[in-house]
Length: 242
Image (cartoon, rainbow, N blue to C red; front, side):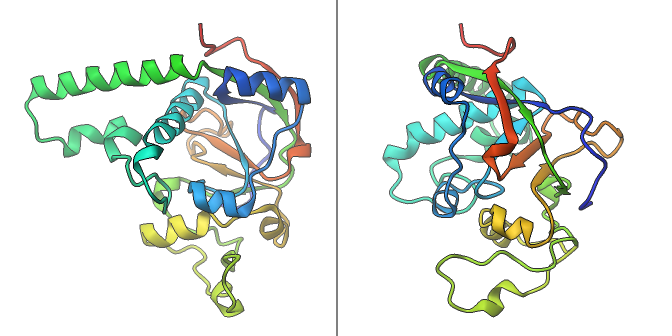
């Protein structure tokens, strides 16, 4: 984990609404979320712009985000890495089989209903995929997100902007598996200033350990903390809304 070989490609996907995609292509500039926005929105790796190598995965994640927005009117607050009104089934269809005790027919009906809802959300927001060229710089590898192990190359935790006690940021958890609550709390605090303290520019997630290419994993993601590293924003020829 931590430092890894350079990426085998510099081109990645980012899914968003057609309206937003057109603005990004025109401006050729992403807006980096602030630390406060990253905390409020529960962004999985903090104040970054997120990209993937698999267009379908990017669209799936974008639909999840839009579903959270749809449910947002029924939520009074947000905490952790997911929206309080979202269920595990909404965010990870692979988990459904292990937790759903309904009959096979009921499961199928629920899955069909969910698929229709996701399609409706994708069409409503006209979700498309952008292709972008990324100069990732020095990469910190977070391994599998679900393992919840803090990289050894980041020996101190990021400090919450409202925290007055500096020693809270010095607790070493490097290489240790964290509780879900703590993992969510600290990953969403990451920003460029924190990463550069240890000599890193970007973070990768879910890199395929069995493949030197590493970007072949379906859920591979790269979090970019400096928008100047994102170049040539253009409409992709895959995953487009029709």
